[in-house]
Length: 308
Image (cartoon, rainbow, N blue to C red; front, side, top):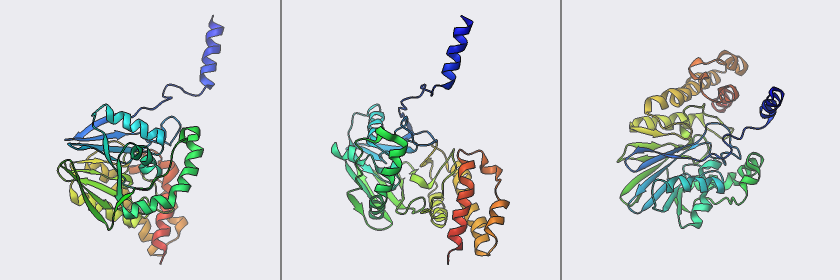
């Protein structure tokens, strides 16, 4: 009997984990009529259907405003199920804050069910530009769980850096950030003093500076966010937080990249020496993904500030 038990334990040890084989998002209240859906901070996977981000929705008299639609059709279905547990009202609007996959590749699912999809014009243009790249990347990560996903950029767009939108007595403002991806934006809910930042703010995990990201824009956009003095922040990744936490985990990091790494580049210091000097930053090292992202973030920030 002991031998059989030992063999079973050994078998379990080498099998893939099944305890969380089907991640189901849950909505949590943030403020009056505002809810957040906080996804896992790790990588996209078949388990989470690409929902490794934080989303929000607003329940209005005329229906639901969903902010960002997930990275796949199946992810969108999960977001819809989480919304239905809060309200029977249908999703009337989907507002996209960006063009990274988890911000908009669920648009088609909601549009089929009568929702209008809205974004800044620059956001929709960026979605179209990156669609093929994102679908190829997601195919490797999600496999068959991506089936049925059809890229559909936002069809109702607003020109300029800012737009005000009202539905069912609730007003939101779309404000351009252009930080993580070109065309990115954040949503400001003035009545509740809640900011839904898209991929401008990361908490619980280190923000990523991608080849097309802009640290300069990120620092400016975060300063604009701080000037709004939000009561609550729904970040692009991580738990709902206050401005102080967002400042510690994102704002201060943008300041480091701009004011320390960027300044070193502008002063024509050695990139290798600069990256080595700041390889260990205890104030950020506890954040998820620090080990894998910090050096690359510094490299890309240095390159951005080094450019004429």
